[in-house]
Image (cartoon, rainbow, N blue to C red; front, side):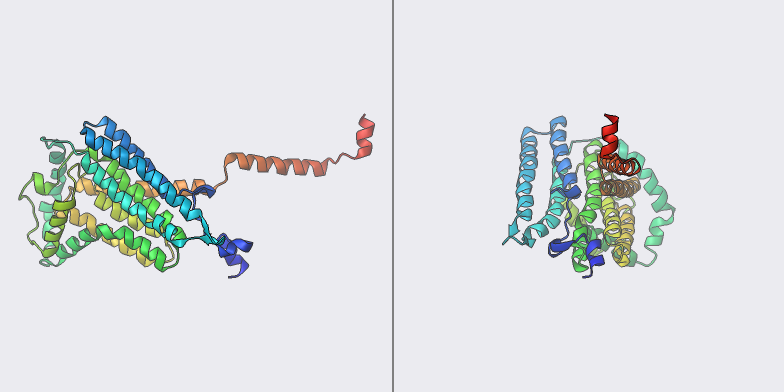
Length: 347
């Protein structure tokens, strides 16, 4: 690697043999990890405010305190050098994957906070938009080719759980591991923004509230799989905003930011996200406002992470002030040198 390439990757001198650092502002905690830790603390606070059973509150508190403590050990191990050369790769790889597992845990914890709600006022206001779209020709267009398009939509809906791991895998394949944190940051913010709102929008999916209404004509094997997944592993806290839609678009936006030189990855994820958004409404997994709100959360995550990344790349204002002051003093000294003779005369 030539010197120019080394500089572009942050390498200088002996540091060229070490992996590219992906820490926040020269620290040890990645930005996506900060987001997840913040959500864990938010969940603890939420558990004290909501009328949840004491065992649930205590379990959430225990888990969300123990996880950052255990994660701190992982971070330290990631920084310990083996044979005085470089840290073990296994711990760094673990830090690329553990956030995905913690996001799943965050989903389960929101399910523990589910509150009973017999009235469906929110659902009644949302379903109006669904009826306009589906009965106005939307369902007829989707089913115009028989079970083909419905099957594609159901397959894409099932793939939503694999989009984030796919994005991380592509960064590995194209040797851009140092960008994993950038990808996970967008994805984590987009999904956790949805989870954080679930307790405040208690609602059930349209296939449950409006049983038998506007359901797909074709009951494909892919739809039966999705219904089985939701029936066994879904939560019943809220459907607004749609975390499926937010996660799909956030994965696409994250891939576009972290891997811009491989455009097909971001484009593939973006097309899949659009199909997932359509499938959530057509399959009656979500209401149309859920899907729109999910897209809004992903866009908000994209904007927030861009601002955070740009601000973290700039030096602090204090450093800029000291640098400008030194430059001004240096120029002043050159223009107004004080010789020993002038000093004696002044005395």
